[in-house]
Length: 288
Image (cartoon, rainbow, N blue to C red; front, side, top):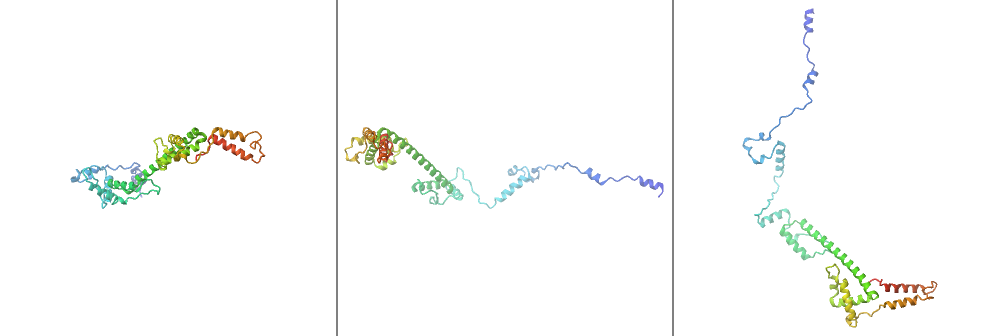
C-alpha cells in the first residue's frame, strides 16, 4: 500500500460507539401518555345519553357495566311508594320473608316467661300486619321479656328493702310484744282481706300491702281492741312485759346463783336463759 492510500484509510471518519448511542437515546424520564377524554370515545349518537354523563374514564364505565351484568337474572323488588296499596305492601313483605300467617311466628322464651299466650298471639297478629320478619318479631319479644325481668327484680328488691325497714320500725315500736302483735295483726288481716291480696298488692312506695308498717300497725291496733273476739284471738299471748323480764333476769343473776358459778351444773343453762331474756327484752328475735 502506498503512502497516499494509507493516508486516505487513516482519514476515514470514526463510527460512533453503539453503547454511547444507546446511552444517549435512552432516558430515565417516563414517557407521558397523552390524556384520553372518555367522552370523545362515545359514538356521536350516544353522547347525549344522561346515563353516560356520570362516567369520566373507561375504568369507571367498565366497572359499572360488570356490576350491572351481575344483576341480570336476579329477582327484582319494586319499592312501594305513597300511592301503593296494602296488597302491594303485602307482596313486598312476602318476598322479604314474612310468614304466611301470624301463627308461624316462633319465640324463644324461657318456661318461666311472664308473657302469656294471649299476649303473644295478639302481638303476632300485629307483627304480621306490619310485615315484620321472624327475627325482628322475636327480637322485640326478647327485649320486652328482658324488660319485664328487670322490672320484676327491681320491684322485688324494693319490696324486700321496704319489708326490712318496716320490721325494724315495728320491732322498735312494739318492743317485746312484737311477735304477738304481728301474729294478731296477720291473723286479722288474713281473715278480712285474704293472704293473696295482702301478698300481691304493691303500693306506690314499692312496699307490699301486707308489709306496709302503716297497714300492719292499723291491724295490730284493731286486733288489740278486738282481742276477745274469736276472729283475732288466735293463740294465747306468750310475751312477757318489760318489768317481768327484768325480774327474771335479776332472779337468775342474784349473788351466789348458778349464773355466777362456772362450776355449777346449771351454770350454762342459767347463762343461756339470761341471754334469751336479754334478746327478748331488746326484741332481737327473728320474725317467724
